[in-house]
Amino acid sequence: MLEIQIQNILFRNFKKKYAHVLKEAPVFSRSIDLVYVNKEREVISIEIKINDWRRAIDQAADHQLVVDRSYICLPNKKKGVSGELSNLLDSTGIGLFFFEKKSKTIELEEIRPAQKTDFSWQPSREQLEKLLYA
Amino acid sequence: MLNNLKHLIRYGTHAEKDFFLGDFSSGYYDAVILNGNMVAYSLGAISAFILRIHSPFLIDPQTHAFQHETEYLLGKNGEPKLSLSKLATFFGDPVRSSLAKKRKISFSDFTSEESKINFVENVSKFQVEAITNKLSSQEEAEYVQYAIKDTDSNLSERDLKPAAIVAPYFFISGNDYKHWLDLNIDLVNKTKKYSTEKCGSMPVVAQLVVSREILGDESKREEVFFAYSVLGCEGFLVWVDSFVEDEMPEKELNDFIKALSTLKTSNKTVHNLYGGYFSILLTKLSNKLDGVCHGLEYGESRGVVPIGGGVPISKYYFPPLHKRLKYADLVKVLRANKWGNNGSKNAEFASSVCDCVQCTDISKFGDSKPGKSDKRGVRRNYPTIEAKQHSLKHYLYSKVREFKSVKKNNLSLLIKDMNDQGKKYLPALGEENVGNLVRWKNVVHPFVEETPSTKAP
Image 1: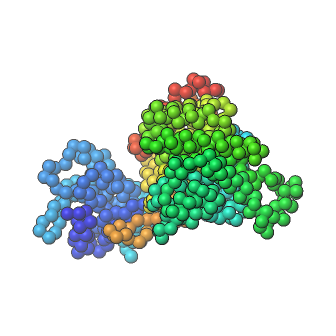
Image 2: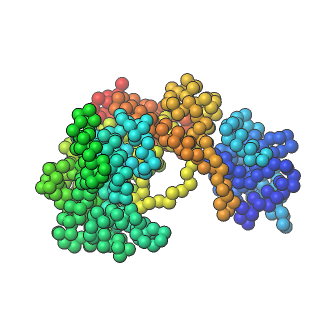
Image 3: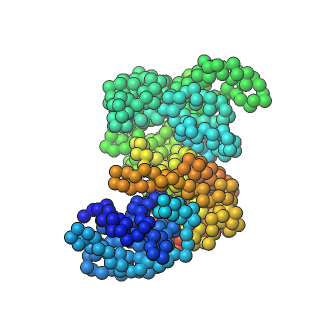
C-alpha cells in the first residue's frame, strides 16, 4: 500500500470526525500530509511514512514550528518502538501513531502522545489556519 | 589588473539588472561575468547594461555548451536552442555546422590548424568586438562618443571592452580527458598569439573546467592542472563541476587546494568561477585563489550540464554558517535563542546574525503562496517575488561583509569564528547544518603558520 493511499483513507476517516481537516497543507516549503483541529481546538499534524522514519522525524520537527502537536505515523510492524526512535520521540516531543490496514480501512493507534509545543511561528501559523478554516 | 578583481558576480538574467544598477551599483563587486549565450541572444540589452555599469567585465564564451548531449542542445521543439544558435553564428565552424546537424561537437572536429585558428579568432572577436560594434551601430552611438569625450561621465572606451579574453574551452572529464586537455591547451596558446598579434596584447585567461573525478584522481589532477600552470596566459578561471563547498568532504576540499597549488604561480591570477565562503577563505592563503565569483544567490556551485530547475524554496543566507538555510531552520534558530520575529531589531540577533535592513523584517524572508496541487496531490508553498528579492539583497550584503571580513581578519581569528559558530548553532540545527564549518576549518587550519600576517594571537 502506498503512502498516498493511506493518506487518502485517513483523510476520509478524519473528515468524518473533525470539522477542519486538510491533506497536503503547505507549510514552509513542504506540505503536511494531514492536519486537523481537535476538540480542544489544537492544530495537530501527522507525517505518514512507510519507510525512513528519520525523515519523518525531520519533517515533523519542522511542523512543530507551526502546529500545537506534531505526530509521525508509521506501519505497525509488531516490533514495537526501537530504542533510537524512542529516544528521539522523547527528546523532540513528537508523537507516534502506528497504522494498520484492516480490510478496507486503516486503524490508527496512538503509541506515544505528542507534547504540546510552546512556540508557534505566527506568519506560518496564520497562513495554515486560514486554509484550515476556509 | 586581474589581480585587483577579488569579488566577481555573474550576471545570470536580465531580471537581475536592477541589482547591478540600483542598490548594488558600486562598491559591492569588482567585476561582472556575462554569459556568452546571453550576450549573443540579447546583444542590445547587454550592451546597454555594460554602458551603465562602468565596471570591469568578462564574457564567458561558454564554448563547452556545444560538447554536451543533444538533449542540452535542442529545445522542446527538437530544434537547436536559439541562444546556442546565435552563439554558434558568432563562433562559426565547427560548432555551427555540428549544431546545424543537431549533434554535439567532438575534439576530432577540430581537424586542422586552420579550424582551430578560425575558431579562436571568432570566439575572441565576439568578446572584444560584439558589444562595441553593437553600440556603434545603434542610436546610442552618438551618445557613447559624446560620453567618452565628456570627462564627467567617467566612461572610457576601455569600459566597453572586457578585462581579458577568455580562451575557448571544453569540459575535461571522462575517458577522453586527454584529448580535450590537449585541445584546450592548444586553444589557449592560439588565443594568446591572436591577442598579441591582433588585440594589442589584451590579457588572456584560460577557463579550466574539470569534473570532480579528475579532481579526486591525483595523477590526472596533477597532469591537468600542471599543463595549465605553464601556459603563457595571464590568469585562470577555475570551475569544478557541481563542487558544492558546504557539502564536500574534507578529502575533496583538500584536493581542490592541491589543484590550486599546482595551478597558481606568482604572476598569474586564479579565480574560482563558482565559489562560496570556503573559496573566499582560500584568497587568504598563499598562492591559492585571487578572487571568487558567484551568482545572485544560487551561483556558489554549478553543474556543467544544466540541472532541472527544481522547486524554488524559501532560504535564508545565514551569515554565521556562511550557507543558505531552509526558512524552517532559521525559525528553529530564532526559537532556540528566543529572538522572536523582530530580526535585526533585536540587538542580540543583529550582533550575532545580521544587522542589514532586510533583516529588520525577518518574516518577509518566508513570504510564500500555496501553489497548485501536483499530480500526486502534493501542494507546496512557493516564495513570493518580494521574498526572493528580500532574500537576495540580504545575501549580497552578507557576501560583501564576508569579503571584507576575510581581508581584515587573520586566519586564526577566522578559524576561531567558524569553531565558535559551529558550536553555538549545533543544538538548534544539528550536525548536518553546521558540519561545513568543521570541515572547512580542519582543511584550512594547516595553513595558519604559512599565511602572511596570520600568526595565532
